Image (cartoon, rainbow, N blue to C red):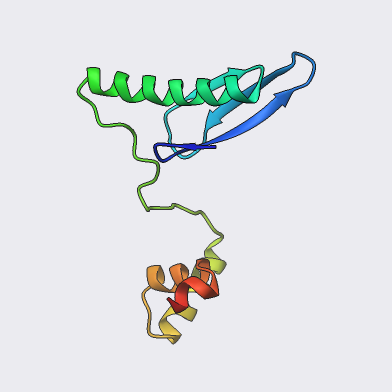
Length: 109
């Protein structure tokens, strides 16, 4: 589900007969629940609206889902190999890794 740019993941608790949801594209915790699809959707929208209202009342910007920075720890030998491959292609480490992470269709655009 998506609402105002916020995306949610939903699980079903069969035993309790309740759907549980969580917004997945922000670091802040936004959860909701409902016993029907209609109730779940309403609870999701209400939770996002409540979150945005809470941020506004505190004079804070809502959490931006992602900064664009990824810190990945790799073994030193892998780091050396990737850096060497990047230099061999005349690219920065960042440009080389970004190219490898993007799907072929996205890099052709």
